[in-house]
Length: 150
Image (cartoon, helix red, strand yellow):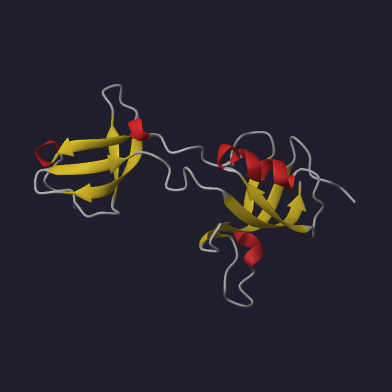
């Protein structure tokens, strides 16, 4: 039976969990008869479309194979970086933006590039913005099911 290798386009069902068992993402649905195969994650191994640990875990799997992998921080979203957290004055943020802890905003740099940030703290005068990936600094656990190669 074929095994997934570099350059293969694969379809994978997955459930991602934190170490405490909290599910943070899944390609599976809870609706019986929904044809969930359509929800499988499709990517090409070796193109960096998914985190490195996820990609490496799929290599060597055959269609129908299932496994659970523990992906360390350095093979997931990396360590949290304190320099990616900024405290800005409320007056520097457009007044029409809803400011609530947990809201995601998009920040545009002077060069025109933009990136997402999350509001992590609010005071009467400041807003704390965090540009770290929400899963940065965490080890991740994935239940994988290789659906298809090719």
